[in-house]
Length: 263
Image (cartoon, rainbow, N blue to C red):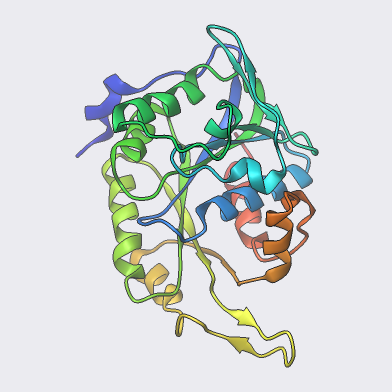
């Protein structure tokens, strides 16, 4: 299946935007930490001085504003939507920035959800960005398909956890990207291990990781292993993810920076 088949669905972003690189953070299932990985990457890239934005495409389970401590609503006109800026000037859009009550469920059918995500690309005034990260909804259904068809992605990062079905989960996301000619930048394993706070011993809560073997088998870069870290969890709960200063994803950030340095 070639991406040419989907060319008719492709949409340009707003004419006021100049977005150099668009990277989607995906997984084959929910609950693996896509939002955490996407948020950490955007924070780290901003810390390096890049102009960055994050598009929360998980309409039914948005969590990005909470991690950044954003409570204000996005402004807009009939034709344009303006993203909200975080403390460190990361531009952000999420359905939680548009609805009156953030704890209200979004009970919409697939086509409406997909069209909302599409508007986040066509109607949001991102202006000049070096990197736009998209926090994708889980799976390979309507909304991920719409994003792959609508937005010209420069690459995806697959997030997994060290469980028995990880190989199958990775392959689902991998095959979807391949079928639409979207580059797979690499894999990040979340919840990879836990460092015992008393003895410092590394504990593999979900069993021994097989991510190295999977990355070699599929010829995908392993971009990092993110442990269960209570410090990060507390900062996310308090809306202070921009204060996280850990090196778990340094390799991923360096890879992205080198990959797109000439763009």
